[in-house]
Image 1 (spheres, helix red, strand yellow):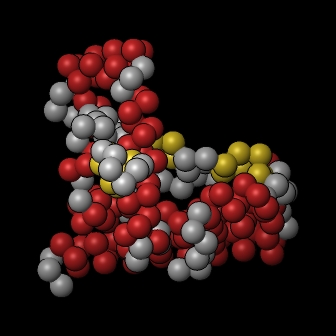
Image 2 (tube, rainbow, N blue to C red; image 1 turned 180 degrees about the vertical axis):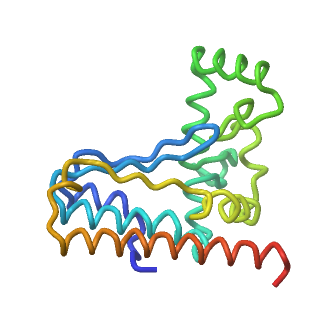
Length: 193
């Protein structure tokens, strides 16, 4: 909504004083850690992260799914049609690593009926079966403020005056109201409203 850049994280890296900026996916969660020693930069980073996670452009632009997930690729006019995509290629790499194959097989056998028995990035042979609508439904279900934990930490929290504390409390209340708004919308959608 607020951030319209094609790749907000790429833009942040170029113009931020961040000391850490990344995203990491696990079987049961995705983390978006961000850090900056500059207070204003940290506020800007938080604003972009919250906007990108809870209001991603994926709902308006299917080409993001095609670029990041999977797409058909034709190198030459008479060449073979192949699959391509950022996640697809990353997972091909992960599935070719002996250590990761062993770890995946152990997890699949120890936890077959849980999220820990699944590959969070997807099996490359199955990734092309993912449809755009299924991708959006997964995001609607799991990447939802009511299903999130937001942690703030650092010494900057304690070095505040009254006005700054009120600003922080207001931001926390806004985040809480945001979560309630999404939770209510989520329940309304499930009820068919």
